[in-house]
Image (cartoon, rainbow, N blue to C red; front, side, top):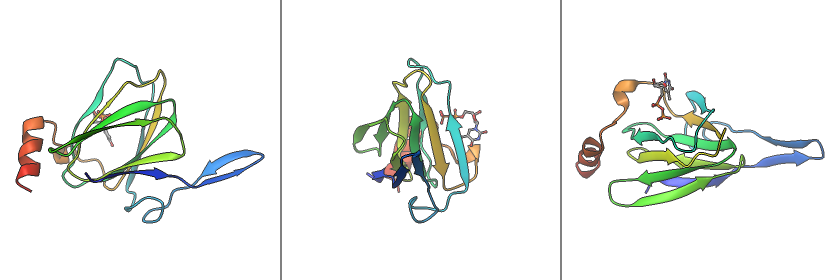
Amino acid sequence: MDYKLIDLNIHGDNRGKLIALESNKDVPFEIKRIYWIYDTLPNEERGHHSHPNMKQLVVAMDGSCEFELDDGYSKVNITLNRPDLGLYIGKNIWRVMKNFSYGCKLMVLASDYYDESEYIRNYDKFLNEVKNA
Ligand code: TYD
């Protein structure tokens, strides 16, 4: 499955810590969009979609949440709970985000601009897409 957990490079000293991400270096694509998710609730799931063309890197800036990734053949569960851990998600991966801690803050870097028509929000359509790819 095209996903990867990336330990992000921390520039720390006695004043605190800093992490910097650059396109095509720390992040394995050119970043075209950044968005963040906050005011999350433990009983609410998000995601339930895939992207045929878009790659993303997700960081839990605060709190924790679980990602269920599915490439149509197998599934993995990943917990994001550190601001120095990036989850890279490649194309054609169905993702469900759940078990958010109260107030978890997720930052998402994306390889493309927002385009609702690029989303696959139907699981059977997703399976069709990956089996015929
Ligand atoms: P949605 O895709 O439901 O979020 P999630 O992936 O967390 O389940 O997006 C929520 C709303 O925000 C929806 O109306 C689309 C809008 N949106 C944008 O306008 N731009 C964006 O870059 C994103 C990711 C979402």
